Amino acid sequence: MTGGVHKRGATWSYYFDLGKVNGKRKKKEKGGFRTKKEAEAALAKAISEYNSAGQVFEPSEITVSDYLDQWYDLYCKPNLKYNTQVGYLRIMEGHLKPKFGQYRLKAISSATLQEYANELKLTGISKSHMTGILSVLSAAMDYAVEPLHYLAVNPMHYVKFPKIEKKPRERIILTLDEWHKIISRFPPQSRYHIPLMIGFYTGLRIS
Image (cartoon, rainbow, N blue to C red; front, side, top):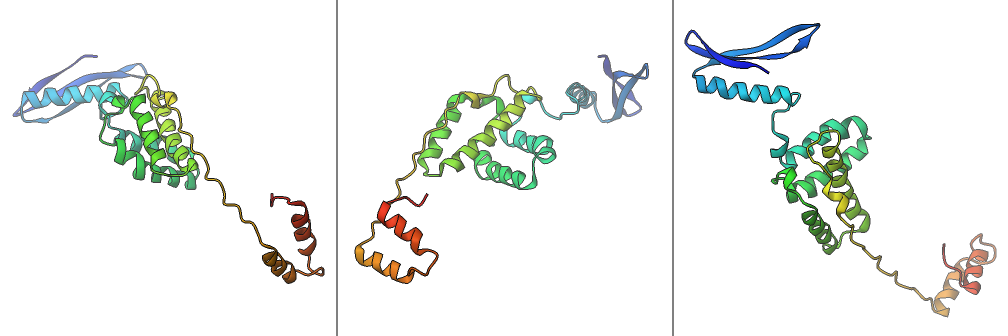
């Protein structure tokens, strides 16, 4: 790609060749810069943006916060149902951005993400909530690998989700007095009498 700067009157301009459209070479030109240095800096930025299909940043420098915003606009909004979008946005704003937002996307390692997953477990959140947070992060990084090519691999693929065991349910054992109070409320004429009696005499669980 050829390009350069030149002076026009009291200001400087830059130019560079674009691709061919209908077999004809197109050129990009912009002027109004006060100095040659300003025009050269603008030329370098313009060429960079053109080569990266309009991106105004270097993929290697993008922060996690900016990338999540981009992923939300490019993927979530066009492809997900509204309620799912809202859920993803809450996770991004409430968890992912506060934790990783200021870091460069390429600086996030599997070790860092594993530590974060372990921290989530220690906060006492539910298994489903933890899985939701980590799954959104993994989906976002998958998109950074393909189709955006910001990352070579998704570091979340090497993160093991911590196991969260369910708290055992408290067993409630009725006394005979409590049982008689219940069954007196549901006499034989009641539709609930027989199911209650079956449960009482067989010890069946509710399920």
